[in-house]
Length: 128
Image 1: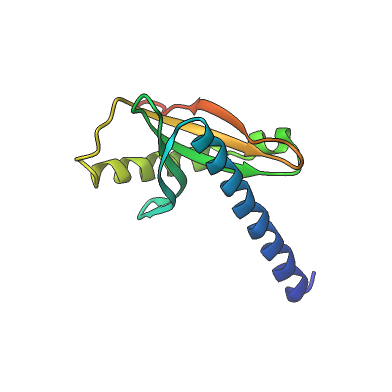
Image 2: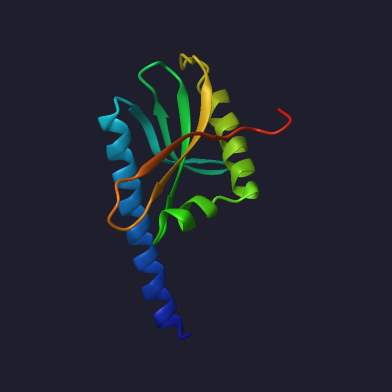
């Protein structure tokens, strides 16, 4: 594969990912969630989205955009979960004023021609 072809594919994937994140955000807002941040960067890594449920739970959301829902669900690997957990801990430690009724890790999967699927409490920190 040429470098030019690689860049074209990479740009297309980036556009698809941004579109998926926008649709995921829209789905959460329509459910009454308040978006606290998108593409939140910490020393531990990036969190696709941080949202607050109508009940006050802080959700750290990973958005996966793939051709099929099954591919999107299988795309979240354990090492990514650990990175997001560390990033979430940093996010919360830097915002002690943030009222919290709980913390949750969600995944939103986006595929072609379907509405985003919100998987609440998709995973939990192990041994923490």
